[in-house]
Image (cartoon, rainbow, N blue to C red):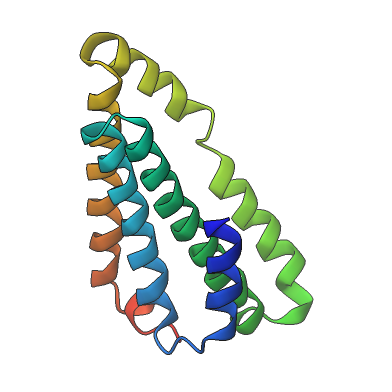
Length: 135
């Protein structure tokens, strides 16, 4: 529900600094992982899931919009396929690493580490002018 509402809402707003907004939504996703790790309860999981859904939906709307605005129409199919391939390339590797880490340190630790990695990497990307200046 949060994802549908947030995707609809973000699509109605003109975001001036799309790159900054996208990466702040990415960092918010990392915050949801912290909640999973630090508040391992049903209310904590519901809150974390709502935040993660909001973050994922808003990032996705802004990302696809940026692709459609900035990529020439004749290249959009190719660029989108490369984007999808790159975005899913490491997807099978992450659960394997998380499983080994969870076995030795526990699931809460995995969520905290995932949150830290997500927040640090997404905020670090904001030092790139090409991301900060993306409109």
